Image 1 (cartoon, helix red, strand yellow):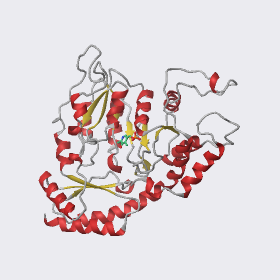
Image 2 (tube, rainbow, N blue to C red):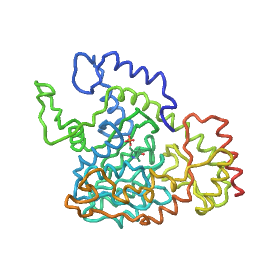
Image 3 (cartoon, helix red, strand yellow):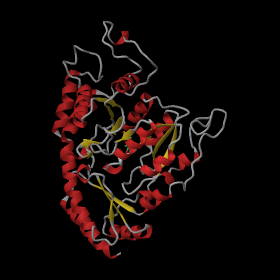
Image 4 (cartoon, rainbow, N blue to C red):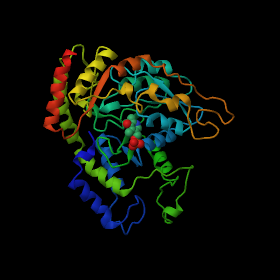
Length: 400
Ligand SMILES: *Cc1c(COP(=O)(O)O)cnc(C)c1O
């Protein structure tokens, strides 16, 4: 699963190009940098790879979400709908721009349930963020259809699904924009880093300026110091070293996915004899990035028994119902409105009035599905012995 598994000579070579010039900044220094613009090159290659017109590199997948939401004009007074099974970063970014996160159920795709989405849209909904969790597709075509009917932009959180597709089209390219993470455990990694893709030139221009303190990037004789600005920005710039690593990792992405698919197929076969087992519903199995395998059992108790049996063989799986970082009822700091801000923002208005109250039992369908689902991450380079161990543990588990 993580790109660091195959970190090698290609990454080193790209990084050396940067170290040879000594220019770590993505802009400026035209003489010293000898034509080396790694972040720009990474953006161009990423846009080409995903079949989109524009890509904007930023410092992380979290800031990618924030920059995208900001460029879409989302802020206080708005609601943003996402799913209750995701990494905390998705809704942290929504709170970060001052909007209120609203959570939908997930369905058998383990991603946003379009039927529940429809029920949660209000006149305050300013954006919809389906997440392609654990490497596989949200039902994004259906979600975009619903959003279009209401005139609401869709931002695809593709942090966990770089290289994933539906009918050949890249995840992240269906909505108004899509965000990616290259943190140290993601399928392709730059250590820290993120990207936003879009076909909308004006949206891209706004993101580009906002992420760089508002610099308008218009060519002018006064260079950077003389540039104008249209609005207040902030700094989410990616460094040249990360851009360099990204170029090398991107070139390996399709190979990573291919290797993971082979391993995943073997594990699926071994698990298929467990009574009542159901594999995660994939919108397009061919476009799966295969970074995880997810299978659900008859009920929570059955899942527990199976996992005890797997653990006894040294192959315990992840149950995200128990995981505190990815599932709504376990986000006690969100549910209680814990914040460092003295006024209580973003959970309270400056006067003290509560802006939102969350109920831990609000997503029963998600609790059922997530609670009886077991998950293994799929390494890019799976040790054959380890693979055999997992497969034989799964075969044994069919009697539990
Ligand atoms: C990792 C992740 C992020 C945040 O990415 P960082 O680069 O770690 O900030 C956002 N959303 C999801 C679904 C993620 O898994």
